[in-house]
Image 1: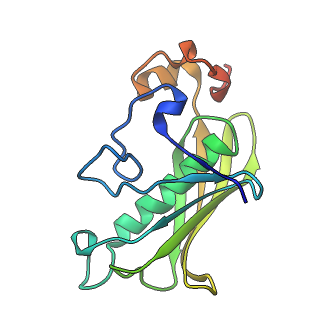
Image 2: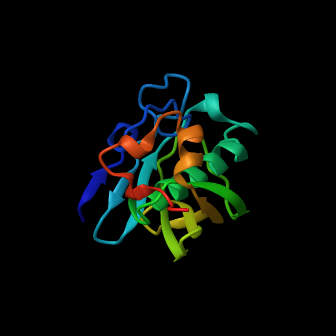
Length: 166
C-alpha cells in the first residue's frame, strides 16, 4: 500500500482546518493520506479528553467532523475535484472512546460532473469493528465559487482541473 500525504498547501491554498491542519493548535491535527492502491482516503487518530462529550466518549460532533473530512479529502484525492458537503447521514454503532486508536477510511461511491457520493467509516481494532458509518453527497465547486470559498484565485494554481467548468 502506498500512502500519499494529503496537505492543503499542495492544492494552492492556505487552510486552518479544524480536523486536518497540522498548524491549527486548537484543532484535531489528524493527518490524512491517499491510499492510491485501494483508491481511498485513510487516517489514524487517538483523541484526548479535551474532545469528549459524555465521560470517556469522543463527542459525536467530533466524530462527524472526522467522517466529513475524510469524505471531503476523497473528493479531492480520489475524485480529483474540490467539493463541499451538500447532505450527509451517519449511523453510530459503537462509541468512539477517548485515548484509544481508531481509523477512518473514505471512498467515492458515485461521481458526476456536478456531484459526488461518498462513504466513510470509523473503525477500531484488528477486526476493524465499525463505530460509525457516514454517507454524503458533495457538490463539486465551479471556479467562481471556489474563488470565494477558498479565498484565492485557484484558477491560477498549477492544476485548475480540480474545478467544475460551468
